[in-house]
Image 1 (cartoon, rainbow, N blue to C red):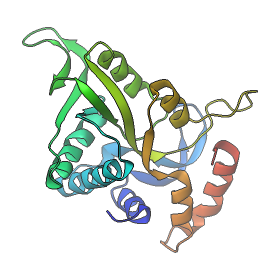
Image 2: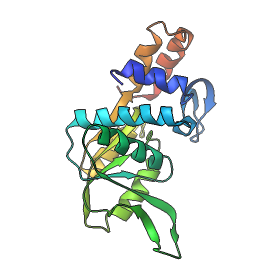
Image 3: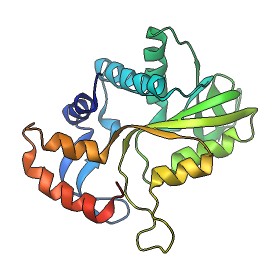
Image 4: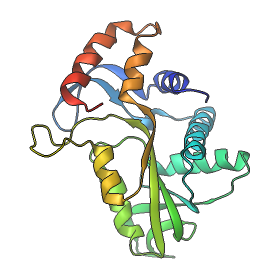
Length: 217
């Protein structure tokens, strides 16, 4: 994965990124929808993992463990660990269960021991609930979170009309973690892609209006 346009093209081809008229969980009407659950083949996960791995290496964040919050973060973390191994970086992977296992080894955490410097991986931040639930579990371990990497920053204001400085889900989470939240692509990159003649130019005006109204660039 060499650039953001290629990554966005990949997301569209996998139907992760769709354009149309969608109603979000918040009730807001959106001209686009993002669902990483649409990635479903070995080749696609290989490409996805390499995109995350490249973003991690470029970020310069030093870490000991990849953590994928249940559920969508789990395959992302596994795919990314494989891609990093291709580059000679072999790290452990851990993830959480939504409900504690009552038999066998029990508990919420699965995989490598959660210790040292932990890098969180997820798809897109809306409320950030999945990551925050995982953070609560990690806080009880001998570990510290050094950052998070996501596929797309929607850059939507989470406190529209507030007197304080406007914030996004990404900036809010970064402040809470005290660590960087890196995105492979940004909604502004999507806008730029739509203007480059990929056959989806009809959506650029609608997207631009949505971004102007709801996003912080």
